[in-house]
Image 1 (cartoon, rainbow, N blue to C red):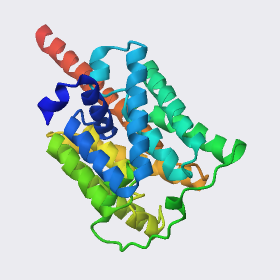
Image 2: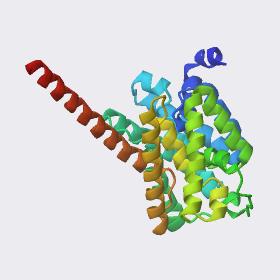
Image 3: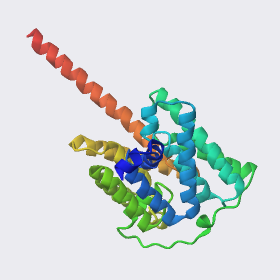
Image 4: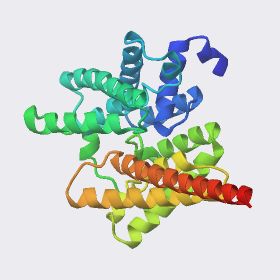
Length: 302
């Protein structure tokens, strides 16, 4: 599979772009993500492909750095826009036009932050989708999708952790969530296991503190931002686990504040929690480097 996609670089970049939704530069991961999305909705699957193709092609047309394009860095925010719009709205013509426009804008915004060396993860998706949600709710109203109108009743069981994986890409089904977990595990086992632990932890905290309704927790809506936080900071050191914990707690706090004011969360709690944690981590690292340098200097003087 790897050699097959590498023979078609553009296809490889598109699939990696889908895999990069969960920070995995892996074409097979992207394929499994697509399978999971199509399991949930044909429209969302088509939207993901259309948007990722558009975002990647935009990067090609504007001649962004080839290594970044090949890594899928201009596909993942675009892909999420492509899944989000069919999730929220009926798949009428204007929505498909908006997916293309949104994917182009997400790719361009991603490039701006990459050039500035600012790690914003999925913020381009969040920002563009917030704008499109406002447009189609207030300026040019579109009826909600059938998915939003469906009644779902789920038991509060261990499967909510898999659904946390699924909800990263707007999938509430256990099968899709399981596929997403396997997709991440294939690319990075430690990331998948950290993310699973974070999903369980976030659900427990959300339930204990009543941060989300029990139905939402069962659907994985209290866990998906934690999944992404854990993937960012996953590693083999003890401190990696500490930073995962910090980022998850911060993401839960941001999600709780946003929910109180009726903001549409998307993946913004993940973005905010992760960025805050990166600042803390870098401050911590710089402090100990400075302390070590001072001790080394003192020892040399003696």
